Length: 88
Image (cartoon, rainbow, N blue to C red; front, top):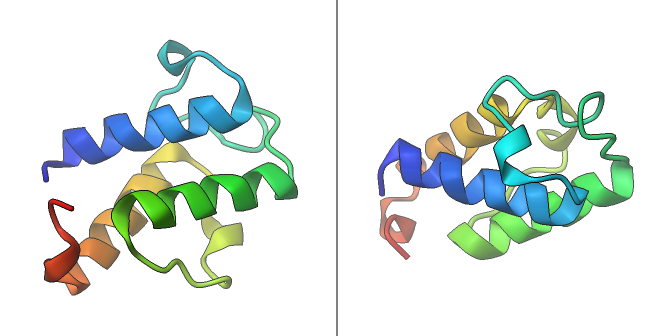
């Protein structure tokens, strides 16, 4: 799975949960300030990402995900650590 695929899929998840158009969301988009995502929506996004990629994101990592780029990088890192999940 390429980074552009991960980026596109995460943008789609964030757009779906936040109610914003996917076109408005870039790698630099601040999830909280630009998209007005509160803690409940942040949890929804996290759960959707975990289900999509069959991964587990540590609770400690969630508050550190401020931008879309950080979410993509975290997913990429977790997938690299769990190669059996790649491409699922």
